[in-house]
Image (cartoon, rainbow, N blue to C red; front, side, top):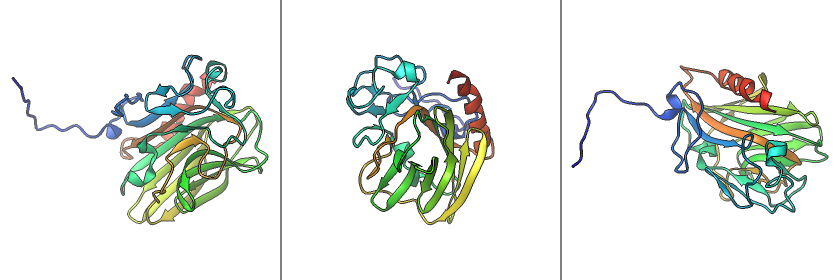
Amino acid sequence: MTLLLKSDKTIGEPASLSLKSVQTDKYNTVFAGHKSIVNFIDLPNTVADGTNIDDVFILGKQSSVLGAQGNITLNKGVSFVDNAADKSILLPEAWDLSKYKSGDNIVMCLWLKFPTLPAATRSIAGWRYSSAINWNITATSSVSLSIGVGSVQMNGAVPLVANESFLLSIHVRITSTGYDVVAFKNKEQGNASTGTGSIPIPTASSPRIGKIDGFSSAGFICHRAFLRKFDSSKTTAAAIISEEYDKFVVKL
């Protein structure tokens, strides 16, 4: 027998609920607004090569990706070797910014650390293929991070300091004519820019942390990353970022 319950009350999508952050499950069900969370800070150090971690897949062999398996506890994250050409963490489809519509607000946050500063342009995260840029983050020899979203390119958006664990955040607001992009380091707002038209859908690859497109990975550690769509009438990107920073900076 099936029992149907009817009500005149409706529950909005999880991203609109003003609740604390919770992980997605293996079916990508979203709880408390988070579309995707990658959290290595509290993982054991026995994660094997090729192991599924919720909606994330780790690629690479222990011999060539320092800390990808054996040193997660030590580094509180997954380590990438400078100039590695085939190592990445694949991200679920929520990280495709072309899926969002006018009025949507998305914040992407990554906890990063650079044991050594880059000597050339290297990849951190994103999704791009050839000239089609959905979003991307690259480290440059000018000792800073550059951020791209669609046609927006913000060079030198975030300064880098060796051995500093920091929170990099990108707020993207989709508008009727394009998208507004704002960068943050820790709690401080940095560069801001506006793009017009739609955010492109690359024809190959997928959103990822590590190597993207023709850029090999930088030598860095990713402690944690998440994407959240939020209701701007209930909270702000700055408030989400501030809460994230205060909660995790003490663990790093």
